[in-house]
Image (cartoon, rainbow, N blue to C red; front, side, top):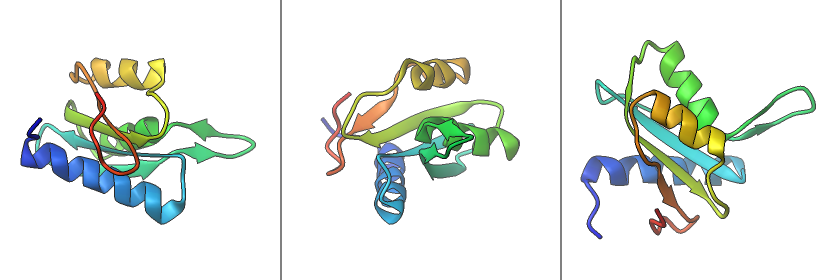
Length: 105
C-alpha cells in the first residue's frame, strides 16, 4: 500500500514523539489547513489521556476546526474514544501503525 506523503509524514511524527518520550503511544494529526500536531499519551495520577486525545486537544486549542488525518503509533489497538474523537472532527478512520511504522489499519 502506497501512502500519501502527507500521511507518511504524520506517521513519522507520531513515531518520533513516541520514541522521544518512551511512551506507549504516539499520535499526530493534520488539520484542515495542513498544520500538524504530535503528542504522546499522558498517564498521571490525576490525568490520563491517549496520544490521540492530546494531539486533538492541541489542534483544537490552536484553532483547528476539523482534521484531515489522524495517525496513531502503538503496539495495541486504538481505543473507541480515539476513533470517536477523530470521527467528530471529520476523519472516518485512523492510520494505525506499529512502532516500526508499518501501517496496520
